[in-house]
Image 1 (cartoon, rainbow, N blue to C red):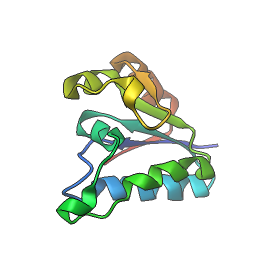
Image 2 (cartoon, rainbow, N blue to C red):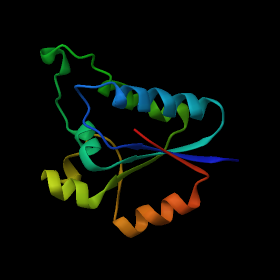
Image 3 (cartoon, rainbow, N blue to C red):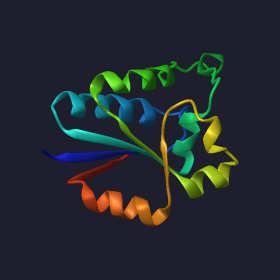
Image 4 (tube, one colour):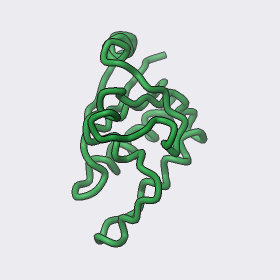
Length: 118
């Protein structure tokens, strides 16, 4: 089975990259690709609780992360350095994500067939 990692590297609002990444990950998983997700750089902001994107005229796709289990997307990772950069505590995250060091991220990338960065 082919393995894919979808990387969320941009902020959740102000552009369509996050929504497109989420749609792509769910679509890939529905075609039986073993799909993992990594949040890094500004992409860790997708994991902030209590977001209200409607207040700035954006669609609330963040709630859709709760559907990942229905697509058998169980491997969710977040970059330890990015969490530190944005002052986010890993125990405050609303999703069950595994915190990875830079070395562990490199190892994960080496274990998959494709990496798609949004």
